[in-house]
Amino acid sequence: MTDAPLTFPPLMWGEPATDTALEHAARRAALGCDAGLVAYILGPERAEAALVFAPEVPLAQAMAMLPLCGVGFQNALGALAPPEVAVHLEWDGGIRINGASCGTFGVLSSTTDPATIPDWLVVGWRLPLFPETPDMGATPDRTTLYAEGCADVAPPTLVEAWARHTLNWITRWEDEGVRPLHAEWRGLGHGIGEPAASGDLSGTFLGVDEDFGMLLRDDTTTHLIPLTALLEETEA
Image (cartoon, rainbow, N blue to C red; front, side, top):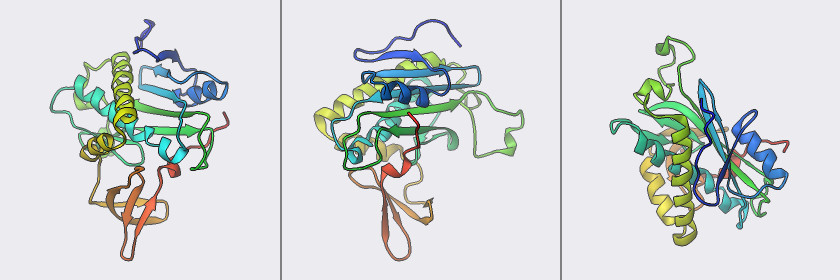
């Protein structure tokens, strides 16, 4: 959507992606790029961005970067969109705008072992800008950014703002621990206290544990589904 270079905060830099932002960032991370790379796509129908991390804690704790990046996204879009636009986050990475599904986050890592410190971790998002078809009534639970009154939100500006807000939360997470992030995420989490499902399990979504694992209560017990269950496969 633009050929102008994007502007990022210190320790971050941008790079246009060639396929998807998440896969591009994972390939670059696997090749040894430094943390702080923001891969992005600014297409006519969608926007994408992904950030490379070099965790210093085991994967189970490093996965907190998924909800952290989600909070950064909500803060960024919340600052750019009209005040009546509500942005919430699903536990599994889904983005909700005014209650409807609108894009998603994904996460890739060099390892799937929760006890291992990853060589790299990549968190990215994909956001539809325009409806795929004129008849949005056929999919009432799905929407797009511009269908929700956000026509003045330019994708380059959103990617830049996401990087800034995410960096702010990384700094807070490093300085203050996970408690402030927990408090922020709980206020933005979608579906807490409501019926939910994860894999073969279903029940009531009670919230998250200290590592943001899903607490899912059925008739007999409370199940803990770790964030590592959301890792996508990668060939990077």
